Image (spheres, rainbow, N blue to C red):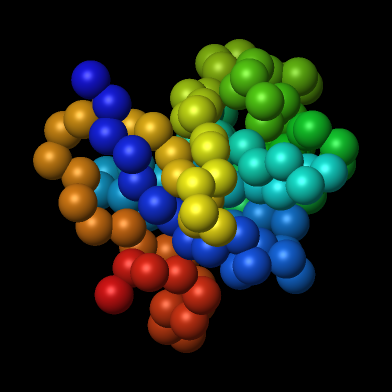
Length: 124
């Protein structure tokens, strides 16, 4: 069973290419590529680094720690040293909100990882 979670409004992704969200125990990177949104696990499977801090190049996100690369569409590893793929999340846009589907399990609160306080999402 899946639960839909609204991350933010589409307008809040106009000036950014990627943004990190924390939903329960899950850390998720939302990426905007060619006006399409993708959600992928934010933690590198090799080095436990936040991928949101890495470089997004086309459909690939590069880990800032050791350079492992992942395809944001599938979570598949593109470049070593990582060997384990990442979880991806279905994304839809509903009434101007970017919504992801998570496996149900008590997740009710969305938080973002904006440094200096939350200013761009509905996590409060």
